Image 1 (spheres, one colour):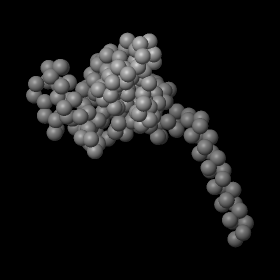
Image 2 (cartoon, helix red, strand yellow; image 1 turned 45 degrees about the horizontal axis):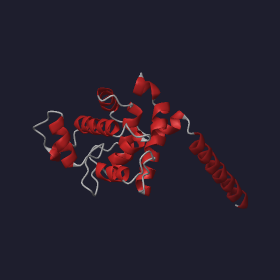
Image 3 (cartoon, helix red, strand yellow; image 1 turned 180 degrees about the vertical axis):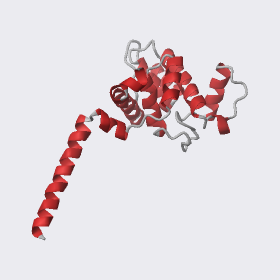
Image 4 (cartoon, helix red, strand yellow; image 1 turned 60 degrees about the horizontal axis):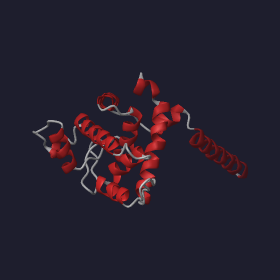
Length: 192
């Protein structure tokens, strides 16, 4: 019995060590296990339509909804890219979608990702004049344009705009980290 306990303890330590190595090394199969790429055609098609990196779009979807097309946030955001109905209504008007129904349309993966890509592209263009424009675009996607615009207004001329919300800084860092993982692990599916 004592010998069995020792063997089990050694196996447990070895398993934890293997898990730690895999977590640190993150081979492609490991990334694919933890970071899915559902709706690949929707992600790639809409990313191309709006001149975005498909790995970025996949990463935003992962951070926002974990690829759950029916996800709803406490703030009222809906779908894969977690769009607020009012934001989506504005996007619909800008893109010619006059017959927008938020209760159902945002649950449609293609429409949700199309609107989310349009919005992400809009934010990237809006903040592209700043040194850290891509970071600010992701911060605006997470915390809202009004907050980012206020941070810009509070930054001395020529200074780098800082993101004061810790949760938004973490969001941006996580999107960028997962984007690199998607780019590597799903390269042929995203760019092939």
